[in-house]
Length: 368
Image (cartoon, rainbow, N blue to C red; front, side):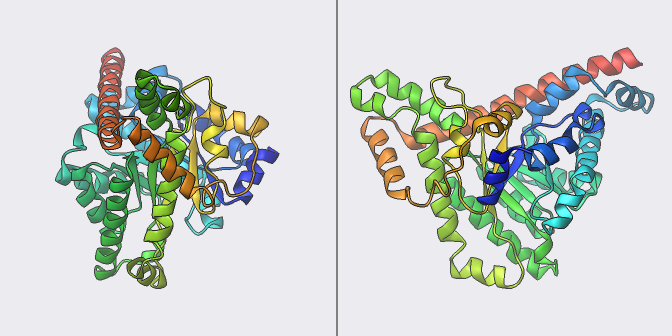
């Protein structure tokens, strides 16, 4: 077992793997990572499944069975992905039981094309929840404007939700409000609030990639000094929003009734700039009650040489504010950047979904 990942868990960080495939499940590698690298959950997205199913390992027989049933590509993708998520949930069943459902979670995302469709998102969230049929699943819903009501409705139905593609502090506040609204609806509907869990996936490295490019275009010494700092600063201030929001009278009242706080999750934690430390978005974002979902390369890098220095967030709020203010003063528009990143995130998932559909259509044709 890695001492670094063990120390990270002891500091209050839940380590989730940002990857899943049939091969990982059937080879026992996923179970092994629980033991060796302290992972306690998994996140997926359309890009991850495009890579897994496009790679082909472990899917041929299942695709052939879908072809025999006459399923089209979209229905086959649902069959394959929900089976992977259900089986991964079973791998994490012990973790889920040991943490009362807090961890041991496996996330599956609604189809990207529904990101601007509130009713469609609500319907597919319920369908995926029923298809996976595991209490430790989570349904991923993008934090678009249209997604906010879908989050409330899905939580209100007693379904655990991973809210994804959050880039701005303002949108994060709206996500927390949507979650609390959902809990209020769930209570009114008679659901056991203690069984409903949620995380809010706040993206990190993509913020640096976009803001750093703009700072380099400005080119002044003051602007260049700020590169590599926006992502961490933004996430630290998101944790401050989390602390403030769940200390509110509204949230405290729901928690007193058995509800769980919606934990912040750091996503997009693979470092994209080789000039930055490869463990930056783990080591600098440690605090109690957070989740860090890592691609395998980041997980193994931290296991090998990551350093846990205790809480690296809550004493840094003033500096984080100064960093974002300085970036604004350098001429980089925070709102414009975060809106662009949301749009680009949706476009990336749309492209991955289209690639996945094409791959599965071809495989179905060959199987038939």
